[in-house]
Length: 464
Ligand SMILES: *Cc1c(COP(=O)(O)O)cnc(C)c1O
Image (cartoon, rainbow, N blue to C red; front, side, top):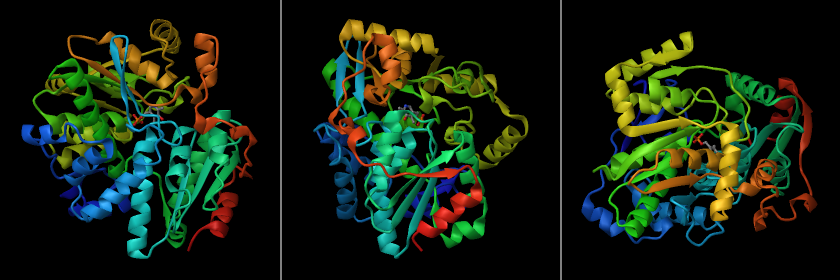
């Protein structure tokens, strides 16, 4: 399998190169040259595999430049860090199925991709005798999942910037209590935007970037999307069998369009309408809902909400979908993205919109509705939802029909105790992974919001 760019500006590359490239060199996103279809025969052979076994089968269709034994080791080790024997259990609660994606070390679904990606980075660096210094800014989930993905790995250091005193206490503790010496938590005296601006400026200094082998924890890395395709197929098996139904729907709380794009890949792979539709659930930041319902993809202001990992306006993975919507025509994608940078909006024809609506249903869920959903779902089922999952559950209930609805639970509620408490009157129970966090030693460096100070710190502690 070879990979290409949505903007058509790179020669086809093998999988391993996509991992280290992240963003394509022409500014586009990387996609496989084709999405393999899964035959009914293959499907019945996959039906009863364990999660890591299934991951190996699915990923092998896209990866042909890593020996199978090695790939198996990378995958099995990645999911051995999960606390649930089924890795991603699917449980029925009321009328809905909940796909629990939060049993990894940081209790959010990003672990599913980043535990694997950490192994993959380490493997490729060792093979090439190379080193990598990961630099990123976080307002919460991504930073801790990235840190847990690479902590203790050889030939990798990670530097994560976050706004000092402005990330939730649980999330800050998750990052700063990691004892491994290759992890550097930089608490910046500023806002999240300051952190992002500093990271962007450092990456813009190409000489510095090269000298210190800087890399990003990109939410656009193809390997991350690929790892997420697996759980859609996994959940399809569990639920279609239990309900004796051939089709299912998924409801996905969406921010950067990465998770739901993985769902689309699974939809194409499975074919036959087995994934009948994907429900794209947004919070008040509804650019993607406006796109699905009205063909209007236009920038607005970012509104902070109680589901912060979905507070985005530009969905970085959206371009991947655009590539297919435009009939796999990279010249059109390139034009459209240039137009979007100029005007802050994209519009679509009635015919294109009709095709979008064959893939997606969408609704935007307000904070009030989110809290009300946490409360009513708890009352009816005794099950506690985190605010992101609740957005998806509210949307799933809205679009419930004759097909089973599988709602992705993207974070454990204990990561967002304040929001949960305001909905149900008490904090959710803390799972083992979060117990005693406050008592562990913390490792963080407080730095002013100045690019030069951060650069000096990175230069001093980077692997070279
Ligand atoms: C990142 C994240 C999301 C959004 O996922 P995307 O791939 O950006 O759409 C939703 N919920 C939680 C808890 C997250 O951490």
